[in-house]
Length: 318
Picture: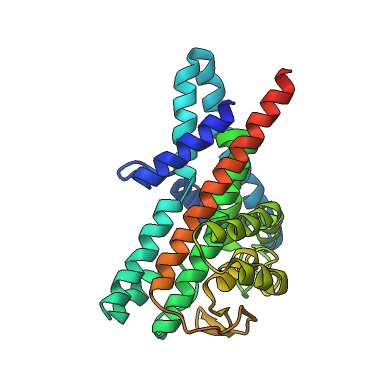
C-alpha cells in the first residue's frame, strides 16, 4: 500500500511542478560522478575493465545512498522517511520535463524559427541537429518523447514500484551510464560495453510494458490504435537497441507517420531502419499529440503499478 501511495504521489508532484529548480538533482550528481570516474578509470585500467568497474560502482552508490538515508530516517520518524522517499521518487520522474523541452521545440517550429528549434532539439537528442529541416525536427522530437516515455517515465515507475526510491535511483544510474558512455563509437565501444548491455537488460521488461501501455493510451486519446498495433508488431525491433523501437513503433503507427531512418551522430552518418509507414507527412501538431499520448501512457502505468502493489498487499495481508 505504501509503495502504491508513493508512486501516485510522486507522479502527481512531477505532473504539477516538474523538475525542482534550485535544488541539486540526483541524476545530475550521478552524471558528474560518471564524468569524474571515467577520467580515473581510463588512467588506471584497460577500457573494458575500467568501464565495467565504473558502471558497477555507480549503480552501487546510487542504490546505497538513498537506501541507508531512508533506512536510518525511518528509525527516527516513519513519516519523515515517507516524505523523503516521495520526494526522491518525484525527482526520478521526467514526464513534465520531457513535455516542457519538446514543446519548446514545437513553439519555435510554429514561429518558423528553424534555428532555435534545432538548438533546443539538440538539448534532448543525441544526434546532430544543425542540418535538420522541419520534418526531420518533428520526427526527431516525436522519437525522443516516445523513447523517453519508457526511459524517463514507465521504467522508473516500474523500478520504484518494485523497490522504492533506492531501486529507482539504481535504474536512473544504469540509464545515465548508457546515455554518457554507452556509445558504439571508437571512444566508447569497449569502455561503455558493459553499461550499454546493462541498460538493455534493465529496460527489457519496461520497454515491453511501455509499448503495451502506449497502445492502450492511444485508444483513450483517440489516435489510430489499430495501426499502432500493426506497426508495433511489424517494426518493434527496427532499432539497434533491442528496446527503443517498442514505443517508437507504437507512436509511428498511432500518429500515421514514419520515424527513424538514417541520422548523423558526431558528424558520422549511421544507417538506420525506418519505423512506420508514410501515411502522411509530419506536422508540428504531432509533437503535441505525442505528449498527450505520453501522459496517457504514464497514467495507465501509474494505475497499473499501483494496482499490482495493492494486490500484493492484499494477498500478503490475508
